Each structure stands twice: as C-alpha cells, then as structure tokens.
Image 1 (cartoon, rainbow, N blue to C red):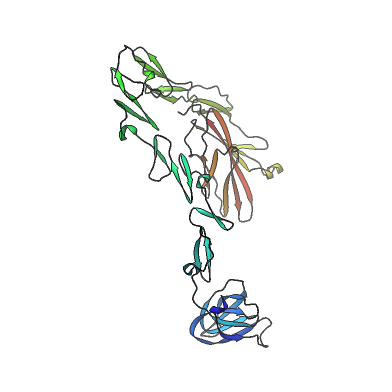
Image 2 (tube, rainbow, N blue to C red):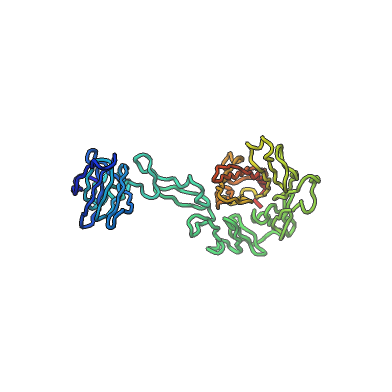
Length: 418
C-alpha cells in the first residue's frame, strides 16, 4: 500500500509489561473501517488472522510476518498483538491501473486489475515466454483435427481431404455424397468414401472422362475398365460379364466385396500347446503359456512374478498378454484398445503409460478415468506387420507402496484396408 493512500490513526509501541516480542493496542475506533498493520521502521505489511476475543464486543487479531500479503479486517473494538513498534492506518479504495492507463503491460498483453496491483496476461491462444506473448501451435498438440490442422496466430482451423467436408464440430471430416449434392455422372452415380464412380445403363459404356456415357459399339464391354472400384480387390473380365476375386484369406461376398475367412474356426496348423488368433487376411499361433522366467502362469494369458522371489522386487507384479487385429492404413486418430484395472484398492492412485513399442510415435495413451485408459492410434500403420506395445499401470497408495502391472498388446495389421 503506497504511503500516500494511508492515514495514521494510532501509533503504538511495546509496553514493558507485555511478553517479549509483543505489543498491544486496544480501544474503540468508529465508524467501523478496514485496517492494516504497518511496521514503522521497515514499512512492511503484515497479515492478520482473526480469532475470537476474550471479552464481549472485542476482536483479537494475531499478526504474523508475510511480505506483500495483507488481510484487511473490519472491526470496532480493536486489540492487536505484534512484536514491534507499529502503526494502524486507514485503507482507501483500490486504484484500477488498467482503467487509468498507469500499467506497464506490453501492447500484445492484456492488463488485469488486482487489489492493490495489476497483472499482465496473454490473450487466448498465446502463452507467456519471458516477457513476450508467443502463439500456441495447437497443431503440435494431441490431434485436434481429423485430417489436416492449420495453425494461425492465436488459433487454428481444420481442413479435410478432397471428397470430405468439415462436420458441425469443425474438427471431424465427413464424406461428401457427390451423387446427392450435384450428380456429376451422365447416367448412374455411386458414392464411395471420399469420391464417387459413374456407370452407364445397358447399351452404353463409360467414356474416357469417366463421367459421360457413349453408345456401346462392340459386342462385349470390358466392365473392369469402367472403374477401378467395381470390385473391392480385383476384377476379371469375361465375355458379356465380369467377376470379382479376393486375395488369399478372404472370400467374395455379394459378388464384389471381400470378407475375411476365420481360419481359427475352420482349419489351422496350430499345435495343442498353442492358441489360434485370427486377423484380417490370415491367422497366427501363439503359445498358451506365454510366461517367461521368473513369471508363472496363474490364469489365461496372465503371468505373475512370485513375491517370494527376490528378483521380482524390481519387476512388474504381473504381465497380461492380449492380441488384436486392425486393417491396413486405418483412419487416424482412432481409439483401438482400452486398458482397465481389474482390482480396485482404496486410497490408491493409478497412472498409465506406454512403456515400450512406441518409438516412432504411432500411439498415445489417454487416461479416461481413475482406473482406465484408452490407446489411440495417431499414425496410420500399413500391413502386413506385427506390432507389440507394452502398456503399464502404476499403482501408489497413501503409504507410498508402489506396484506395477504390464499389458503386452500384440497388434496384427492386415495386408489390406478391408
């Protein structure tokens, strides 16, 4: 509080009868006002904590050192206790430096008035670095946009690939149905994800621009040439017709679509001590007992390190093996797997992290609750390939007891996007 804003009400000093390090001032000061205690030699302010007085109609204020922190307490009958010569001064109204223009905030900062002071802050979309406000690049943070992110000063916006448009949330990209919006085809239009294809009525064939139709002159039309999307995988032309074929591990459904064959339900070459895991386009065999020393199998796919083994003190208590399959070149970002605590203990805190298998930054782990987290695919994976990620859950209780569990997730990426 500047000296010019204070008016001396009473000067007090330590009486000889007071205990060492204390002084007292008491008496009625009316009308009720707000007061602060100021040290007369170093002009320091001191904060007050209100306590109930021993006599009716009086308040006792205990005073403690605290630089730049002043509690102003209204009172009538005042009894103050402190350890030095002091002055009781009258407070006055706060000066709004932001309104009067007496602040020293930079042009790129926002002035915020505080009681007895002010603060220089950065506008939304900026962060303080030293004395300057610099733009926050939202595009470097966890994915905001479905397709592309464009950073702008103080903000950002999302863009979509050709054939898509922004949804109402301005983040997600949705397919544009070109056939409904403005049919570009001369005859028949079929919408597909991110694009469209044109086809012609019987007796016509698609022209070289893939839009218009021409009168069919030859006896046989190579339907496979009309569009690369006529079959999901491969088109075979035959006299007067065509057929679609699928790669190994798939079967034709509906004449054009390819569907995965579950070899684990039909035929496979896994041994008795192995389990069969089907994925898009094939299958793999994994051991029924995946545990490695010093871990022992306690239930299906769950290995535990015995507490009686001294080596286990430095290792995760348990390792659970899980398997999953995804298609090649999956759209990102995409939630693909949830990890959750199977046992919940009171007074514990669980944290989750990717322990290994994310060296190229294909994933990040988003904690969804106190006992669960979601693994998010942020970079598209092309198959066929196998990717192993270790997800760790750390548990700490109020007694600083610490333990951990690992979920070893094997992600099998199929060879195709279907």
